[in-house]
Image (cartoon, rainbow, N blue to C red; front, top):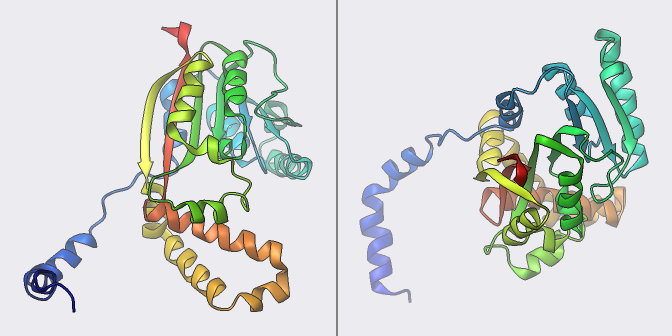
Length: 278
């Protein structure tokens, strides 16, 4: 039988505060939203026409928005050819309503560790949720330092593992999503930043905030939890239809968001500048 002190606490003391405790937990902690990254760019007050590099641009949405909102000239690079092709199509679609965008944005193949940009050529490096895939983040940060002009900025958003993530969970999750465990340790990342000659001007530890925001605004977190439960309860249903590899990716993606919500993963934002910027 359970310890009597525990039973006294759970059935007597806790019951006196349970309803109020639940009510207080239902109150929002006012999490910051993903749009905070755009707000941070606005705070840099870059002049129209300044050069920006979107590292790991994916389908191009962020690069296009940087040009549209801030008037930046943006080069988006990604190592996946199909993503670059989709980004170019998205740019063509956006340029139908805003023709000038086609002169402000371009996309090319490229990797964070070997950027197709000249030295001292960029006012801004934007890198959102990309470096988890790099097994050599030191090279990536050295490239950021190389391409930044004096007085330039790098804005990096990344997810990191925490001590709450069990080794077996990491072994299941990270390889499926193509994540490099070494790049997901904050201490290693910050050492790589310093070694690259970059200064951390601002460090924001978000923990679960974007996950909380998604749940409060759209219920996305709860949907991921429901999907994970279904995937785990009847895997054969999904494997038969979509194949084992796609099942593994779907489950890992759900767990990624769930683990962020419960503190096994933690997001951070770094605003970086060349050390000689003062």
